[in-house]
Length: 245
Image (cartoon, rainbow, N blue to C red; front, side, top):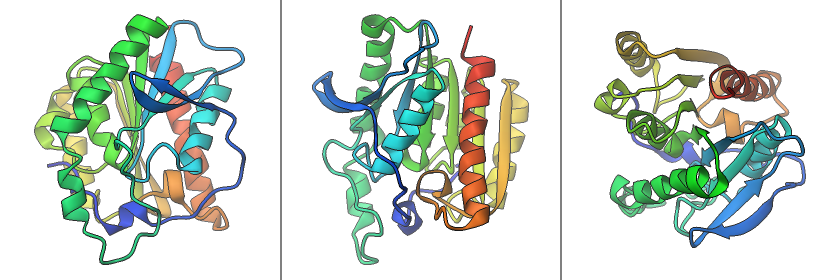
């Protein structure tokens, strides 16, 4: 495994300021937040796969809006089936029981349905995937299955080594200096695998931040604000380079 399973740190964070500009719509019988750009890149779309707090979390919606502001049509479906975990959940929350109801067998078919929707209904010739924490696993799996063309993930969790070895497209990773789920030994293992795979890759380590910083970081802290913003720019530059034709 190149990252550990989600844990308590997956829901700790701070709500960011701003008013989401996208719309909530029903797509493939699933509530979906859609951020549409005013000047879209032609035939390109992004599927944003959230962390365990889900698609109704305003921080995630603001990120989707930012991708749209950079020209990327962005779909963010409810991959948690109406069962998100609240931010800063109680320490005694039964996470193992929750995660059992959100395994690959339930989550992956929905993600594949959305990739197909973006390609066949929306008309995207190239699809990028963004995954935060919980969503990172599915970015890797879709890259391995050639479902998406390019991937980006921040502080990924629950990624198996064999999944990573199978990727068939460019992958960018934003990592936190302090992360019990994606610690130094897992980063090093990931680097070694990516080097062997031979696909374009990037891994950027941000100091002074913890797991979840790219979505839930405290923007009052200078290091966190810098890391959060740079991790987003990292994603946009990656897609600008490898996703746009």
